[in-house]
Image 1 (tube, helix red, strand yellow):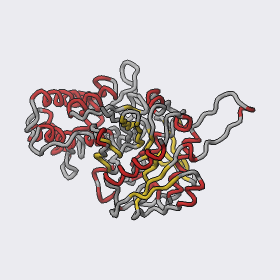
Image 2 (cartoon, rainbow, N blue to C red):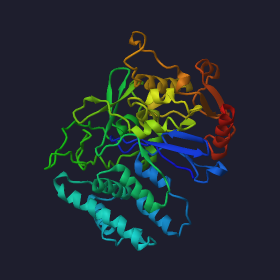
Image 3 (tube, helix red, strand yellow):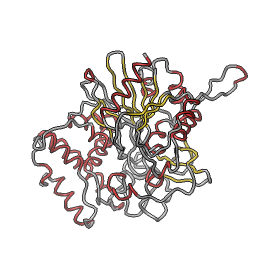
Image 4 (cartoon, rainbow, N blue to C red):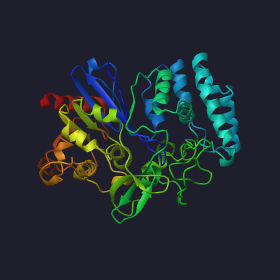
Length: 436
C-alpha cells in the first residue's frame, strides 16, 4: 500500500510544509513541494496528478481526494471544502452566505451524507464561535475558503495540525498519510532577502503581491492562560480588514495575477524564517521528516514556486546533511519548471540547481569534531543527481554545465508545454532503473 505525504505552503505569510512519500516494495521516493502524486495502486506505477502548487494545505488535501462521479457524495464534499465565498460580494452578503452554510441551509450541503455533514458543520460552528469571541478584529469572510475554515477549526479544537489533517483526510477518503515538516500550533512566517539587501515578508509579498499598502509587524497576542492565540496574526503580519491565517489574496483566487507580475527589484539571495517581531529564527524540522529521508530511495524536487514552495522545506537545520548523508537515497531528481515566475525571473536550470544546493549547504551544521572543526560544503551532486526538463521549456538548460556539477539531464518525451503523467513516469522509471 502506498503512503502519500505532501509538502506545501499555507496562505499569504504563514507557512507549513509537508512531505510526499511513495513506495513500491523496496522502491520508494520522496517528493518535495508535493506536486508529484502517486496513485495508491503503486503496483501499477501510475502517477495520477501533476500540477502547479496553489499554496495552501487545504488545496493540497483537496487534490488528494480520489476522483468520483459528479453526483456522488464524495464530489459534493469536495465541492463544499473547495468553495470560496465570492470576492464580488459585500461583506454583509459574504456573512449571510457563511451563516447559511454554518446553519446547514446552503445548497452546498446537498448530496453530503448526514454523518459527514454534521461532522464538518460542527467544526464550522466551532470556527464561528471562535470568531465571535474575537469580534473586535472584524473578521473578513470575503473570498474565505470553507475548507480552510474547517481545517483551522479542527486544528484549534485538537491543538494539533496533524490531527486536523487526519480528520480532513478521513472525511474525504483521501487515504493520505501527511507528515508536517514543522510541527507547531502557530503560524510561521517566511521572508526573503534580495541581493540589494531588501527584505520581503510573507509568501504573497514575495511571489504575488496583491496590495500596495505595506504590512506592519505586530507583537504576538497572548490569551488569558498565557498561550499564543492561534486565531490571531501571531506570524507578525497584519493588515486592516485582512485575515492573516485565512488571507484572501492566495495564489489560486486570481488567475490574472499569475500571468502578470511586477518584477522583483533584485534577485533573491536567501530565505529565512522570522518571528512576530521580525527577528530571524531557526525552527527545527519534524524529526520524522528527517528520519523519512533516511529510508526512501528517491527524492523528487517537484515543479512549483522555488522560493516559497520548495526552499522553505529545505531551509531547516539538519535537512541538508540528512539528504546528503542518506544511505538509502539512490537518486535526487529536480523536475524543472517549464517557465519562470516572479521569484525566478531570468533563471536558468543551473540557477535553480545552485539555489537549492546553496540553501541546503547553508543549513548544514558540521559536527563539533573532525580535522580542525573545518567546515566544508557538500557538492551539488550530494543534493541533486538528475534533472528532468521538457523540450519546450522556456527555462534555458545548459546540459554541459549541469554535467560539470554532477547533474545528469533527461529530456521528457512530450511535445506539450507542460509535464504529463506518462512522460514523468517514464523519465522517473528510467532514472530509477539506472540507479539500481
